[in-house]
Structures are given as C-alpha cells and as structure tokens.
Image 1: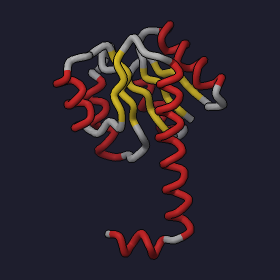
Image 2: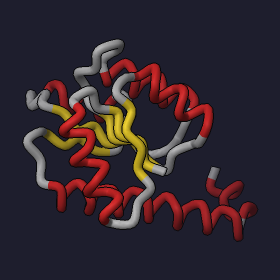
Image 3: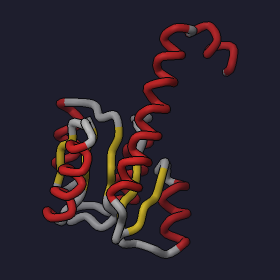
Length: 135
C-alpha cells in the first residue's frame, strides 16, 4: 500500500492513477488526520507527502512519521528552494521531488524505494544473526 498525502484532489488522483497503472495499491489522503487514520488500518510500504497541507505542514508530518515508523517517504511538493529540500531530507524524507513532476520519474523512485526495502526485509528475515552483527 502506498499512501498519497495531498490536499489537491487532481494531483492526488493523478498520482494514484499512475501508481495503480504500475501495479501498486495506492490510497489518497487529503490531510494529515486522514493519513494517521489510514496508518492505523494498514501500514504503508511508502508514503508520498506534500508539504503544504491544510492541517499540518508536511515537514512536521515527516518528522512525526520518523519518530515511530521506518517506511520510505517521498516529499512531492511545490516548495522548490534548496533549503526546503535540505530540510525535508534532514527530517527523514528518503527523496524530494518538486512540482511540476514527471510521473515516470515518480514511479521509478517509488520502485527503487519499495524494492530496496523489500529486499532488505527479505535478507533480514533470512539472516537475523547477520543483522545483529552489523549493529
């Protein structure tokens, strides 16, 4: 499951359509409150997060996600300043894409993050002792 946290319904629907067309189960959330309700139901494999949301900014939401969860986060936003990009990455985002965006680029980055996390989980489940030695 990929959650798309985006208040603009047309952008949210575009992202959802692109992800579903590429085999992902994607669900849109219009604000942070609906995202938290969705996470209580199903833990996502990845979150695509806008910065400018109606109830809380995406930077704050990203920080709160990182306090508890380790799933990948891609920030997809109109905030294009270098300081915003650095802030997003420093708060725990795995990637930062600016609007307007190319859907093929978004899908490629989602594929990379989801596949690398799946591979890591698979390796850790097969070799828990090896992971313990890495710590």
